[in-house]
Image 1 (cartoon, rainbow, N blue to C red):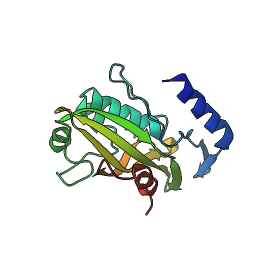
Image 2 (spheres, rainbow, N blue to C red; image 1 turned 90 degrees about the vertical axis):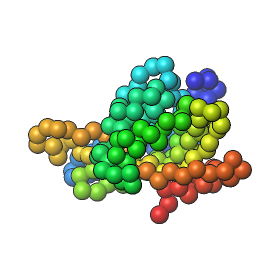
Image 3 (tube, rainbow, N blue to C red; image 1 turned 120 degrees about the vertical axis):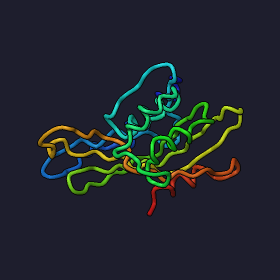
Image 4 (spheres, one colour; image 1 turned 90 degrees about the horizontal axis):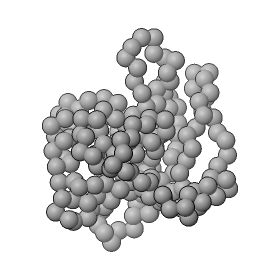
Length: 189
């Protein structure tokens, strides 16, 4: 990553981040470090990445798998399996087919927001996705991922369910759209 971008991120973090904790079921879980909105997060295709420590890392790992054409691995970043072409995620065959023409995806996350409910923390992550297709065309998508982190203390026996993608509302937008404004609104209900 460009040293100027790293310096900008550090400066932004120093100026704007206040230590936060989220209390769920009498457990204090530190809130994830947020990223500066609209800073492109590098998703290296060459290196394998599997990190579920923060919502941004989950999405980086997910798109690392997509960019490496490791669709089975990408599918398991979702907290549940799909059951049909219209479920979220879709069943695996439809999921894999949906990326058939994708050469690479660039991830631009916005500011992460969180809320707790019933022993889990839900993180909303607005995103801009820039996809390059195998035919050389570029496509831009805007939307909101919801990342779920179950409290590890609620599991009395295996299997453990790690932080993962709970839901997503992603849509393609025209190249002339105000994508920053659309991203800002993407996680609003």
